Amino acid sequence: MGKQAALSWGEIAEKAIRNEPASKQEGVDILEADDHELLPIMHAAYRVRYHFFQKKVKLNMIFNAKSGYCPENCGYCSQSIVSKAPVEKYTMLDQETIVAGAREALRRKAGTYCIVASGRAPSHRELDEVTAAVKEITETMPLKVCACLGLLNEEKALRLKEAGVHRYNHNLNTHHDHHAQITTTHTYDDRIATVQQVKQSGMSPCSGVIIGMGETDEQIVEMAFALRALDADSIPVNFLHAIEGTPLEHQSRTHPIKALKVLALMRFINPTKEIRVSGGREFNLRTLQPLALYAANSIFVGDYLTTKGQQVQTDHQIIEDLGFEIEECAL
Image (cartoon, rainbow, N blue to C red):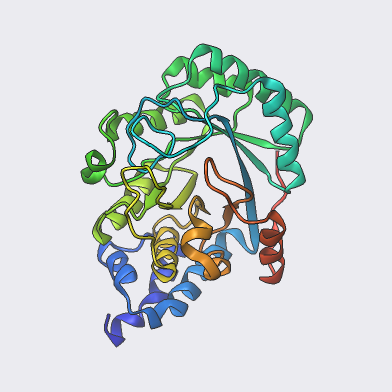
């Protein structure tokens, strides 16, 4: 990264403010920039973040409504059929338990409650529990509900939409050319098809990535452009938390500075979208977590699916200390 190129961060930010993405080469330059360029890069990303979202931070809470028993062979996941990780396993929880989770989300000041279930696709019985819970939540609480239940067809997508699900998450996870290295029980195109089905149903599409699974910098940039082409409203950026007993257990963690560059990249290519620092935030960013919010405008609070998050009060304190504010749910 030469001195002249370093002067272009502001120009990249100006383009992004006009909703013009950084070029692919600029994206690679961001990821490969000398570490002493980190603060100028984050300052440029913050200009874009502030333009579209000011100082607001969206809080999301994830709820593991069904754990384990998954027939898919995703190499990163402790709940997959190939995982030997000792995770808790249970079938779909009942309506009452799912609704109780929503009340906890409110206590954590979350605006979005994310109901997640392991598996290839939801069964009709599982949908019955989820849709009944969603109806009760949306009728009685000031929360938006996001669901993440696997592959969807038209009928199941419409059922969720009619029940009151605001957003549906189905991540691309990795680059098209790297997908077969991560899982072979479904295709990249299967994932694209589900996100398109979500959009057609009228739900808000949420789709993101997992960084640190052996992809190249060029592929990370192309993943950001794939999400722009998909027009996902919310982009969760996960950083692999390698779990013992999974095929990817020996992958190295992403360096905190590299993680911050990735978040800046996502902001420059998807400037108007919710960028959420997601799974692996604490494990990979470590003490640099607060800097992430200069590019991202959303986080999960509390635990993830099978890994622990940090104390909710700590996240609230980070937001307050940065001079940011928690965004209230706008229904």
